[in-house]
Amino acid sequence: MKTTDKQGCNILVALLAEHGVKRVVLSPGSRNAPLLMAFSRTPDIQDYVVVDERTAAFMALGMSQRSGEPVALVCTSGTALLNYAPAVAEAYYQHIPLIVISADRPMEWIDQDDSQTLRQYGALSHFVKRSYNLRAELSLPMDGWYFNRCINDALLTSLSGEKGPVHINIAVSEPLTQEMDMPSVRERFVTRIPSSSIPDEHSMKLLCDEFMSARKVLVLVAFSQPDEQLSQALLRLAELPQVVVLTESIANVRGKNLIPTIDRVYSVIDKAEWEDYAPDLLITLGGSLVSRMIKAFLRQHKPKLHWRISQGDHVIDTMQSLTCHIDSQAASFLEVLSRSVFPIESDYSMLWHRKEVIATRLHDDYIAHVEWCDLKAFSLILPAIPPGTALQLSNGTTVRYAQLFKCEQVLRSDCNRGVSGIDGSTSTAAGAACVGEGMTVLITGDMSFSYDVNGLSSTYLSPRFKIIVMCNGGGGIFRFIKPTSDLPELETCFEIHRDISVEKYADLFGLRYFELNDEKSAAEVLSLFFAEEDRPAILAVHTPNVYNAEVLRGYFRRSRQ
Image 1 (cartoon, rainbow, N blue to C red):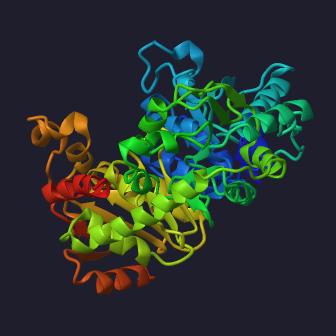
Image 2 (tube, rainbow, N blue to C red; image 1 turned 180 degrees about the vertical axis):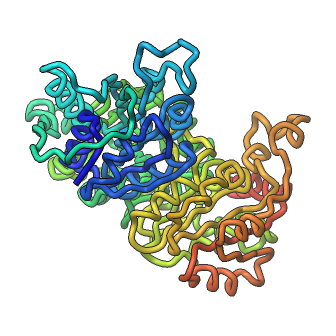
């Protein structure tokens, strides 16, 4: 079988497959023709062709997020690479292993007014773990060894410690489409044995002593990949009377004694009680927090001890109280910790769980009495999602509404909270739906939806992919948060009220369309929407934007009464 005559491209593809890369998202171009030839002619890596590089990058992000495996991206020279930047930045802060590969003009042509040429090497340096600059042609005796070494290094860097993207920039000289026989020699494959995933015995004893000295231990879990070992360790810790485990909806851990509705519960704690609920020891893990409330509370009531568990190089001190960065895999460390500590006399867990009961009663009562709005819609949509579904959430109010509800029947919940932008939500969910079994449901705002509508142009949309668009006039978050809610420019510069024609987009891209306008028809519409099997489906949920903000503000005010 024939392949490209650019030997570097063939080495790259062979080593990606050896390191476990099973999927690549390709975008058409001429300078990257040798790379497209090499990838499309190997049986070891499945390729997806997506024209828009921005959409392609977010689809790759969703594929890697859902599968837990590295995914490669390939683009041509010029501004194509820059369109990857939003998704690569998101992958960096989500710790997603994207292998970003860009074809480039030879370095002697950079800044020489040659078309589709710019300074590509290092263009993503702030958002990748490492950058590499290579030539596809191997002419000197050491070139093959150097290329092999760099690609092995790139893959090991991406997949070790806190995973993350790497950028491989490959200069390709003309002619671009000449062929040679497929190489028969297997490329040298370098493996890495990781260091210990837990602290040494002495350090572990000191940490256990610190833990046992605290009568109030708060474990706060932000966004994470599903991990059964981590879940079991957290469940054991949550059985201790001195321990409370708060989990965000996208933390992907659930079970008895865990509290997954942080804002709902926190909102019923009176100011006079705050000292009772403030921890002596705070343990944080996962990515950035959705809950502004718990973040503000912990910054104001700083714990004496604060452990942060992560394998990253950066000191992350979100609560401004960090005392120990534990460079460890969270699941392994908490597994050992949970088997090394024991109950002490404390009412800390009881206090939080009593508030959870009160918060649930107030929550149910409040929702029962409000008119049709976003909050009411979420109270009907989330319980109707079929068991085993993978839930994707856009940023803005969408992920915050989801934080107020238990949705334990879903397989997992994800949201692009690394950088927390509204861009790419649809493309990310579409990519996740490509590789996941069962149904994938995206709940998105109308601004997020319109911003990333090109994600629907993909030819790889799964019939198991369903999109719910909250059509609430756009920018609902700006009516709720304090910095913008009272500005005179709210409607002209922030909210940008638009009636998004979701039905026309559905018709354009061949999706089955559904519409929901009131509580009365919700059960029937949701049943039909989730039952659709022949093609992807989209549901437009129309709610009143001004009333939505009033209801959400009232939700938290009412909870404190």
